[in-house]
Image 1 (cartoon, rainbow, N blue to C red):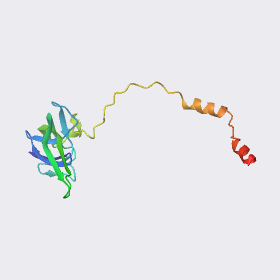
Image 2 (cartoon, rainbow, N blue to C red):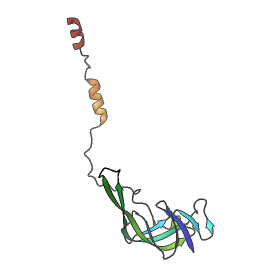
Image 3 (spheres, rainbow, N blue to C red):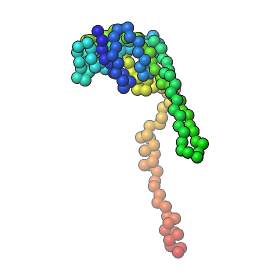
Image 4 (cartoon, one colour):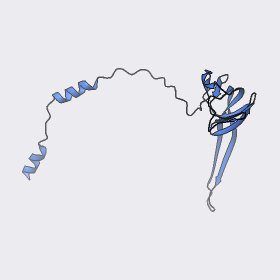
Length: 157
């Protein structure tokens, strides 16, 4: 049986045992993840997704793709050149199981892109701040004075 899944803005036709290079996922090597955006399973076509379907996979490694080089040479009579390179962050996964139904109750971690994963913040708790109500009461208790300097300067002229 095969399935068509969507991840990282791309679609992949997979079968059990296939090895894929997908956009970077928020998982480490050895984790088991589940793709929940399934467009087709066997002869069942979703509209747009197949309800309750899932594809389970095991993360093999986090890798980088081939380096792409972008070279720009600008207009004539100027020696302006620029070279930029890029290596895409990828995740290598092996498809272990294709589920037609019951994927939502499997208990396997959902495959989420690294960019959309929540960042783990480890901050020390801040000291308790003074309540704002006490500051407001102190401000109301103090008498308000109007500046009289403008009147004095206007009278002298």
